[in-house]
Image (cartoon, rainbow, N blue to C red; front, top):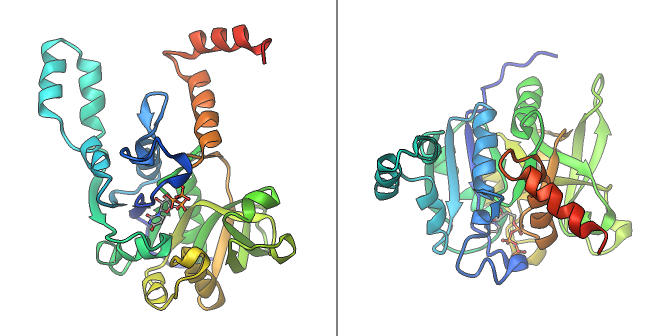
Length: 297
Ligand code: UTP
């Protein structure tokens, strides 16, 4: 099937949640700034977007998240100090992260849910498709997940959600997807319905859940305008996607990559261990330390 679609070049990163699952760490510091070894979570997410061909990024923040803006801004005093000290590599590293893409910010003035946060991106997005990367979901793998979703969007011309099969208790804390096979595909499905935060296992549509990535057509904004508050009394992106699935259509990509929930204490630890074990600077020392303590566990 060949469909003419617009290339996805914009991304929205909602990062305005209160992060109550990682308190007290997230009280004064945005949870998106919690580091995985030496980079804040949100930098991994921006890097994934850029590696997927995205050139324009909007990060949705709130009044407590100024550190995210500072991280992607120039830091003249620090830069000149590094240059004076001959630390060219460190200088290049902190300057290049400010030039990765055109990054801008908008505040979600009230924490009314992920759907409400995405709707704050309307004027940035305009009339084109865009990727959504949840600010607390870091996904690492060979091929950036956003690129995998954009390919599916460009192939079918329909919105796409990134998914994986998860244990029921995880799915019940997020969305549950109803999927149907798509001819000739092994990891792309039709998604015909979605529900958010079901209370009983028997109400799950399946054990497939959205894990932190979507690509949406601009029609999602009109749907969000009419989406009433749902689970948790928040405007849910899942409810708007369910509407999209039933009208224009939606697909789901069972993506390749490992996802870390950085909004969750265990997720942060798992990301730290995996990244540290592969990090050229610390992997040897970290492996030795793990071997030392493993017998005592
Ligand atoms: P979560 O529900 O995982 O984030 O939202 P949260 O609200 O910070 O979590 P807890 O339960 O209090 O710990 C998924 C994504 O949506 C963003 C979050 O920042 C996260 O990236 N979000 C959520 C917003 O931007 N605005 C909102 O009103 C709610």
